[in-house]
Image 1 (cartoon, rainbow, N blue to C red):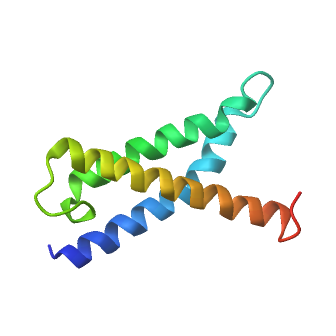
Image 2 (cartoon, rainbow, N blue to C red):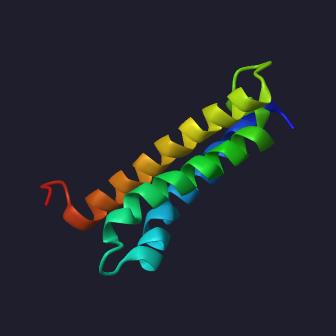
Length: 99
């Protein structure tokens, strides 16, 4: 599999997971006493998904990176995709004017 194809697949998986992780997490944790855990749990889930993508798709990290470094870089990409997902839903719910 070429590096470009791996990067495209990785970005598609991470952006899709980032967009879906917030509403899925909110569906499980939206209730009295747990609503403050939605964003931290979503960030943790996205870090794990990103680390898995970084390990499965080596082109997401620099060439020759060790396994732990690939996992950390993937986790960083996962957190970035999670923030993109939060921003998407912020603008969908509040519009450009804000809350």
